[in-house]
Every structure is written in C-alpha cells, then in structure tokens.
Length: 241
Image (cartoon, rainbow, N blue to C red; front, top):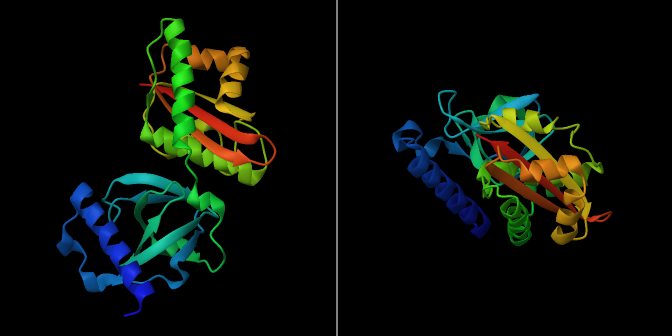
C-alpha cells in the first residue's frame, strides 16, 4: 500500500472512531469492507439543501447542513453515504445520490481559517462594554462560531458586504437551517483593520450597540476572515435562549 493511501486510510479510521465514540454508532452497523474510497476525494452538492448526519442513515441526528454548489472533502463511501468534511471543518455523513464527483481545486471557503486569538479579543472587548452597562457577559457557542466563520468567509469570497448572503440567506436563515435553538437573535458585521477599530465603530452605531448591550442575548459566535479590501471581515452572531 502506498504511503498516501495508508495516510488516507488512517484518517478514515480515526474519523470513524470519533463518530463511534461520540455518537453511539455500533461498529457492526457498517463493516470495514463497506468503506470505499471516493473518486477525487471531493464532491459537489447538487441538492438545494442537504443534511449532514452523525451516521449513515436518516434516523441519525443532523449536525449541520450544506447547500447547492458547496464543495466538500469526501473520505469514504459507506453504503451510499459519503463521509465528508464540511466547510466549517465538521465531519459527518451525507446521501451520495445528492452530490456529484468534483475534480477541481477545493476553494478556500472549504478550509475556513480560524482567527481564534482575535475572536477572543473581540469577545473580551464586547464583554467589557456589557460590564460597564451592568449586563452579563456573553459566552461563546461553538455552533454560532461555526456559522459566523462561514458567513465571514462567504462575504470575502462573494465580494459583498451585507447581512444577507445570496448563498446562505439572512442570519435567521442560517440559524434555522443549522437547527440553532434561540428566542431572539441578531448579527453585527464589520470591515475593519483590527478588532479595536471594530468595537469602536460598532459602539457608534445604534443598531450595533443595541446588539452588543442587549441583556436578552447570552451566547455569541464570532468569525473573522482576511480581506484585501478591508483587512478583516468580522461577523458576530448573537442569540438569547
């Protein structure tokens, strides 16, 4: 076996073990001989919306959703279900009949860069403003982080500056399509050189300031993507539960 194929096999086994451990999937449900390599190691979604599940069947929970045109890394075909990596670096399984083989280069969007240090810095600055106003601090939610990161990169890739994405819809569409539970929600976006400038600019705009100081919000997710036009594109999702 070639070194490259061996490495791929090891990756597949590790991913399978993670799914087994964290989702309760029994190893007997899919034998090792059922795992087949996917041509070109990439697929493109042809359905309008496609659920990403924790196991190879519609009885398994949905962990994410992908959309028409999305290009995904695909590691194995498990009895008609592809083991894939989403744009936000989550692993799951999708129906093989709703995607097609992809031979081109996987775009940057499907390797979303995370700027965790800057994300944390911005959250700290926001919580400082909330503390000054006597409002409880926001906490990071990993699913909101994921959505914010995808939205920020989509804004860079699509060369637009808007709360509404042609690909993903409104912030509420993104929350609903990803099964995020919330009672109230909002979004701030910015094109800025750094997070310090971002918080200063947001605090000068009533709608952005209201989101930052809203006492009904308790969770947030921040995504930051590099932009040739602005330096950084920053997206922050807010929800209250």
